[in-house]
Length: 215
Ligand SMILES: Nc1nc2c(ncn2[C@@H]2O[C@H](COP(=O)(O)OP(=O)(O)O)[C@@H](O)[C@H]2O)c(=O)[nH]1
Ligand SMILES: [Mg+2]
Image 1 (cartoon, rainbow, N blue to C red):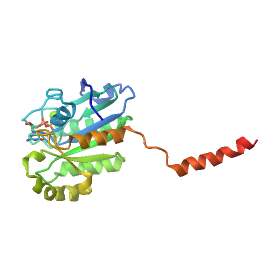
Image 2 (image 1 turned 180 degrees about the horizontal axis):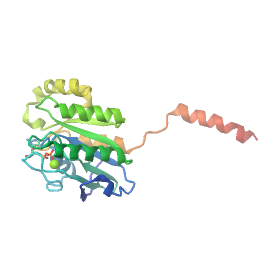
Image 3 (image 1 turned 135 degrees about the horizontal axis):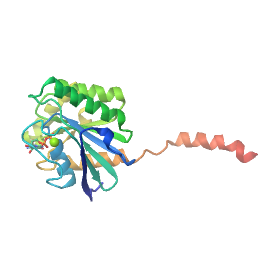
Image 4 (image 1 turned 135 degrees about the vertical axis):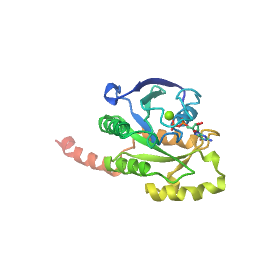
């Protein structure tokens, strides 16, 4: 797909305030500073659409973007920032749970992990949560410009082990040089295009129609 238009819609302290408008949603999760906002900017070719920050833990809001007037991209608040108290963590957890439970329009989640580091306990918890909820996801390994091409495959091994995915299911991405952008756009296309009905099911429905035509 080609992104022709990208608009910031709103920042929400709680998801229940968002009407959704029946448009499909794709959400982005990952720890603070992993590159969520940078990915949105690179994907949309808009440098300042999503605010990026070198200081982890700044975004505690759900940011909603409208892409091609076709679907909503949801930038969820990052987890795993160091200097937060229990109360703040609990508030974050509730916000995420509310979102995943309330969003009927959510089709897919992009789970971002830094290619240079092993997934954290929080990454694993998020992964388990998505599996339990039956929400389809794609793992994206960010900041791949920071390591050599040759080292990438090796770096994927601990990510695969922790998040129970195969290396070929992971998209290596860099918001610096655009590596992986096309793959992400392809994935979005797949997510937004409903699968065709398998032929054998169509055949079965043809058969069940038959008695009516005979009558
Ligand atoms: N080299 C490099 N730096 C990145 C990349 N993605 C993000 N960053 C930097 O990492 C920091 C955090 O990025 P940001 O997008 O704000 O992370 P967020 O907290 O997950 O939204 C910023 O200083 C970015 O410039 C990347 O692909 N390559
Ligand atoms: Mg951000």
